[in-house]
Length: 333
Image (cartoon, rainbow, N blue to C red):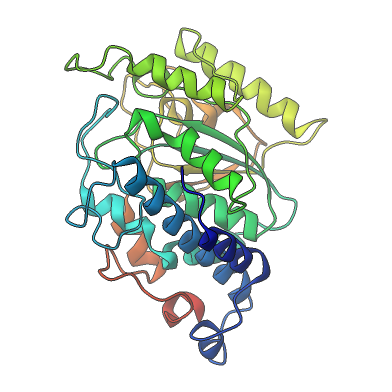
């Protein structure tokens, strides 16, 4: 819906880099060698935010300044017909900060992720800020990544069925803000097929609306039953996409989804942060974290945003948002 001249300016900034104040002015301090890549990811976040805010306002679905005080366009409503689980608003706003994207670039690079590395990015609609930050970080690092989205979203996430995660990713690609396109995806929620959506019966067509988004954006929808068949089909597609004897070396997980963690009767916990290997869970259905990748696969779980921001020197749920390049805890040595 948004077709305004400022979009072209924002995209030009993303693609060519920003050489004016205040970013360049702060580059004279003792900055990390990753400064330009971090700034690239931060600038992508800014451009995405401007576009999404304008689009949501044009559609009349922006939740307003009380919920999204920084006007990021990356926060949803408390409850809709596709909301899957409860969540806290602050945890959803925290990764909308440009510092979060910059810090993610640094963390990934310092843990060996760079040009050509084989990465699986599996995301849900719960943390739009973390989703976009993940894409921005991997593109800034020139990683070779496969994107698999799950549309389900908890409270305050990307939970408007008429402007869901697939719609948002397509809009960002259309305007040149990101390049990544999904390999395939799922509806999300229980069993990855949305059985816990529309619990109040307000919108019996919500699943059809989400299915239509897959068709509109030409993204394969995997919704066979049971869950282990979905995971198996996705794993096969990922292997085909990577090709040959190569394997996924790293998984970046933004939010939580059945396809990523599977379904375990013992409620196996997947801790926030970097894990050297997926937890071994007795019984249940394995997720992509268990069945995809090399023997020495590592994964980064973006879930508890307070824990991550504290570890990375990023302010938790700041109002207003920081200026890219100015946080020396993030951008300095």
